[in-house]
Image 1 (cartoon, rainbow, N blue to C red):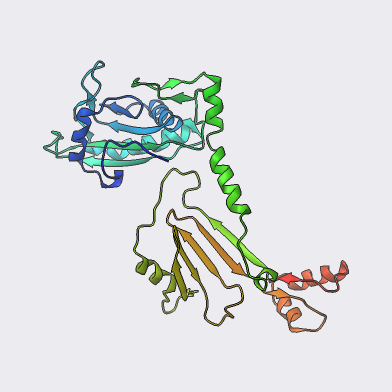
Image 2: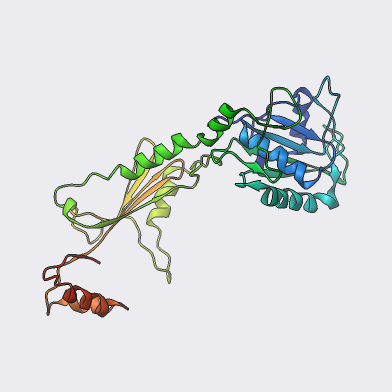
Length: 317
């Protein structure tokens, strides 16, 4: 998902001097300036409007030139001793007024800054709101707000077609997840007979944070193979790269033809982990029975098998 930004760096790397570029950036689809901190309801309205539309930036402590030329003119900021209460109001207002709660990131840019004439005891709060895939975000007043054209104010959406598009915005992601879940791993003939647990993990299921693994290959390999004294670990001895990420496997003590614990991780931090499970075929007196009885409810489980007349059960341990 492409995100608009007036800056050439991520929000966590911004400095107060970077805000000078906003003198050429007008309010509209992607940007809103507030010289003072608005009430909680208005904050939530602005955040939800960006999330429901294309995403955007809200700046607290910046004043625009005029309604006819709504680019940034001055940077009065907000008193630094009010920054914490401002951030708290931002969090609490979105929690209290919006459902579901959209994702956003904030950064406090402290003065002094000669580039924008920001005073020593003043700060500007930048809020980045990505386009959301969990739309619509409904305000507590019952309305669904969106950014409209070059308007600096959020508007209540009433167009049924637009509302339907908001409800369906996440459909492509849901389809992608369904394909991922149904895409069973490929095994050899011997491996296909073994039970396994498949665990799928995503650091950003709704495509809002855009995480990316930038660490070099040798560091990733070191993390997978690391063992620390006194701590339980399951190191992966085999490691190789793919077009979009890495694959690590446990090989020590395992038959290379058998399924081993495998971790596939993509650069976007989505992961697929495969844990082979022991297949037990317990008879009345063998070791598998004793192993199962050692579990907390093992005896109860075995008694259920007997009660249901399972004579040759297969149990994934």
